[in-house]
Length: 238
Ligand code: CA
Picture 1 (cartoon, helix red, strand yellow):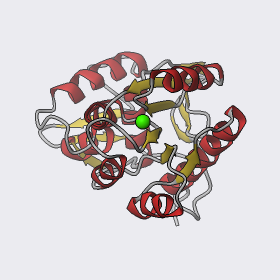
Picture 2 (cartoon, rainbow, N blue to C red):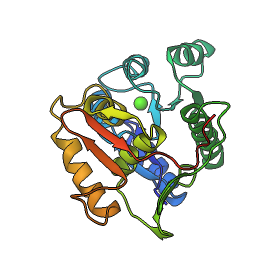
Picture 3 (cartoon, helix red, strand yellow):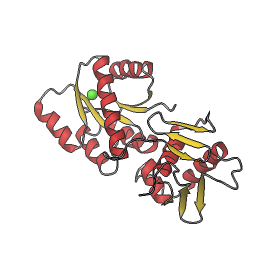
Picture 4 (cartoon, rainbow, N blue to C red):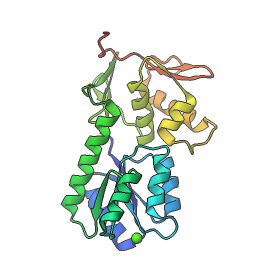
């Protein structure tokens, strides 16, 4: 099972340390940013599942971070701020934040908000009318809800980035996904235009998934174009 990654953006070290410990003890992977610049760069390189965002940062205003992020990412943003005025909440939500927590907050309240946001983003990623079902092709099975990948029932351990690449291709199985589409989806539009990082990740994915990485049966290369994942055998043709 792959842990969900939370990007914690907070410049006050005591709050950051406390929140980070609480999240880690609840099974989340946590990455901290203490400035807006760092937050935007990590949002792009780390592809977090949720961003917890303090509005009052030393360099960039939190509101501007939401606006910037929303031009390319649908990652759920939970704003965490000492600002209590209604106006700030409305502005943050209008700019694209998903939820709002006012400091001080309790751990159980924070966890409940995170669970809600994760459920919501899962639903969005899968479409409202499509039931969540695992992807299956030959011996490979991907459970998107559990984020588990197995081959013939044996768990396969992928890094969070590797998982995102495979899940994205599986959700578009049978279709050719260009290198830039995969890059944009996984790393965001600020990713390098060079696709070396994708090819390196794909080599690692193939070593883990394929019996013979030189003759893949799950993820095929369309030379000079991108990748195509084997058809999902679970999807019934209409
Ligand atoms: Ca602050």
